[in-house]
Length: 305
Length: 285
Image 1 (cartoon, rainbow over the protein chains, first blue to last red):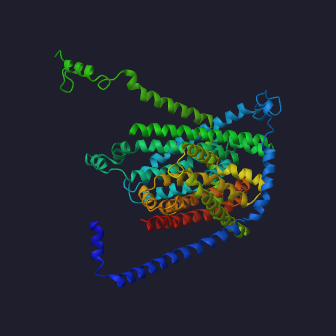
Image 2 (spheres, each protein chain N blue to C red):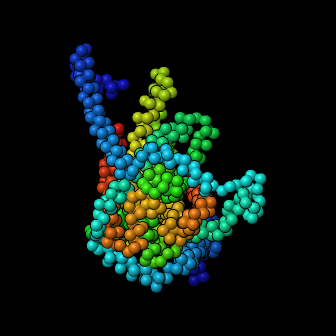
Image 3 (tube, one colour):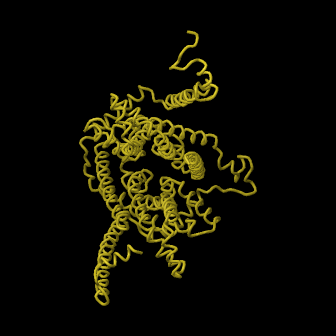
């Protein structure tokens, strides 16, 4: 309360009508600024919206008229399940087993996607780990090398992994190898950038200590920085593994192995019920991964507390 | 010397230390070996995957030389006679990202309040709403794009809808968390003046949460510019279609032209969005 009183006292000896006038003047000025800001912002926003709608060819009429087509598509893709036959053998039309007739093969391909993600995360994570120390502003050796590495990591991060996979399929041939390398490259960029920012926030005193007893750059990183960032690195790598599993399921769409490739083949052959069955399995996988990693994260957080 | 001295300790003292601090001084062999065993297991598994996916030196070398040839063919970047088409496709990618994020934000704005436990108190409703968010969050944009291309036909509209469907639930979830973390004092203050529930929402919560939601939306816009580039591969508009078609036909100079335009665009958008984000969150501080 005293602070408020002091504030009022500091505002000067204004009383009565003068104070009200001063207040009103202040208020109109504020309102004018507000309207200017939102008027300009709103106009810019509307222009952007109109431009985007024009160039992206977005037409509400076409959207509404497309809705029946969507129902038709779903009608075609949805399996004709029969409640009475749901548990029947896979030779019976209308049973779940009939819909998921190739589930052992699909499950194998899902597993292949997961293994692609594991290897890609390990490869990319290793490269990211090494490069992140070079890229960090406070640790990086020399003046130019950190800048160059930082730009390289940003470049790798910006290229979407599916686009890289597209090029790699041409170079390494169709198959899981192209997908693994593409995801590993993207992981290097994303994780390397993240970790270099983690390094920039560490306590520098242990590093100074190691340097003071005559350690070289590798010693400083190994004994000064690494003990501080290892827990962070593993938690980010785990998070990245989660992202990479979804990516590994997707890169198959350009021919880079895993479950995605099977999905394209099904769609190209107009077997939409197969496609939907595969999509259901992919979504189920992403669900399971999401829940598991949440459990793991909470277990770790619980232990820290 | 019968009593050997290790670091100034006699054998008796050492034995006493082993007894009193069992598990710290000379732990059991298994406990010492366990980290090494686990690391060996992990490395062995990774090595097995390495072999399984054919990362042999000759395969890598062959691929790398071909990749090198592509890079040489990429220089100099040259759009040929299609510069205008490529620029239009880049604009389309940007427009898709903008509209997709905008629609997702509009849907997510009210949904976030439905998912916040301090607005909707019923725990059963809260649980159900959050699980619905999770369900939609789990489906990636590429799969939505497949569905929308199949039902709305080729073109950017499928891409806009795909981005909208894949993002609204994530935005709603993050918004709900922001609402739950909002300061309770303004809400209490406005409630104490006898305001209705709607007024409490409007003057107590929205001023706190809106900047957070807007800055999250901008963040999603940045990431969607990248995602939108991919959607064209399945026919949902933007540069993805050109990228997949041109790389299959070895027009690398055109591919590199599109990629450079795209990278410049992404850098510009990131810069602009960063500015705008700090303006939005800074204004209210």
